[in-house]
Image 1 (cartoon, rainbow, N blue to C red):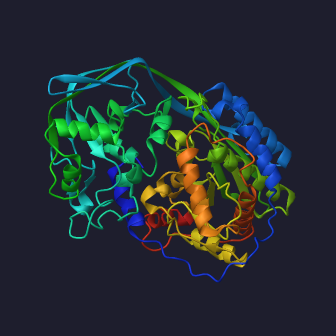
Image 2 (image 1 turned 90 degrees about the vertical axis):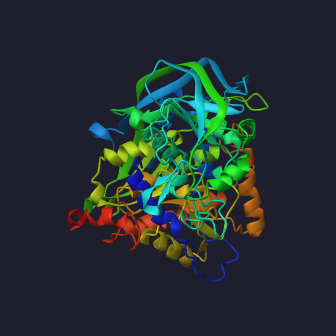
Image 3 (image 1 turned 120 degrees about the vertical axis):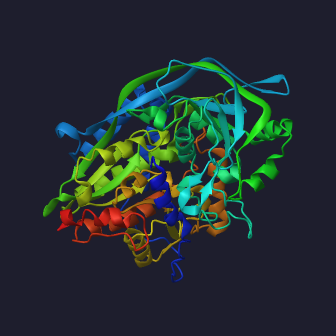
Length: 560
């Protein structure tokens, strides 16, 4: 995930348009499910209550969250599956917090414009420095901030970015490309590749020697609004503990609003839309915003902390060393910027108390059913909201052999819109596990729908990715939108309303409008998928053309 090589590999995943799965007409009524919607509701209500303070890692809420999960795992009949015979895995993290007063400004044409953190700009620091003091650093536009030798694409072309702040666009060069333009079709079309992710852009800016990187926010290209950006970045940030953080992060990284960027380009005698069009050409060269500089002055509180993944299991009777994982992240954004009502607690009911409630319910189903032949592990991971850090740490420090991990089925923010005729996944995994999910849905009289927003890069945004990039077949289940009551029109409207009004906002709270019957239906399906794997000798693989197939094949000897 942290290299250009991996980004090159991931390009093949997003470049291939997912095939639409043929299906018969779905049944008019949802099938029976063994999962209990009332129990899901009860667990989500507690986990997302104000008492849990938004479940921020390394806050008092972490201990409360872990205690809740462990207590419910025990009650479900699971056994501890963590380190030292316990329920948890230590996850060492570096914590960073920008501290006030935060002085940010741009100077154009001799006039200085103060900027307000979380308003028209948001900045963060993920390097262990006590203070950031940047005085009048030149601004350089670097297109999409992509260096992709495999595509003959280089937005940097040898520019010297030392002591300078790079400015770039979000998403891939072909996100808005038209037929005939160089970028058209090179980076997956509307399907975002890893080159389009903000994480990649920060890493590439560090490799290019930039003092900082500011990403221009646009709602369509980012797939979320400015509220999500400021709420996700305006509080304490975390990273894995690195030997040399400067190799992965410029000193300063952040986002600026589109309107601010347009003003800066105009002051430099440029037009933002014209420059965006120019950036869709492989011949693009970086351009310095003449007469424009950026300044920053603030302190950084940094420390190393230990957070925790939580693991319970039902042990296999025949092959206890072979594991099927169900994962969900327990963390959310904690306490942050107040909304219009003054609410500062980011409760995270859908994202992702419902995922934690889901794996607890799945644990109950496995524990009370026949003992599986393979071991089934239920893991609630930390720091997903900070960059998939808990799952990344587990996958790089596994407690169970990666080569004998059959699959990871991840659950992140199942819909509260009600029961749907279809089911989906985050991104197209090009794997047999996805085909198995689709086939099981068909047996229930439901059907599979490919990811409806490939431009959002969902495949890279959930914890299954940490398993996938090590070769483990993995997917993240998404609720469908073709509701039994209201169809696609109502389902899409409800999904869009959640993103606009609740996602990464204090309004993501439990209330009576959340319909847990759809979650229960989806859990019945993924229970069937995991149960079939747990009671078989199957090793689902990646299809030919998947960038993960070679990684999986390399560990084949462990499975024989």
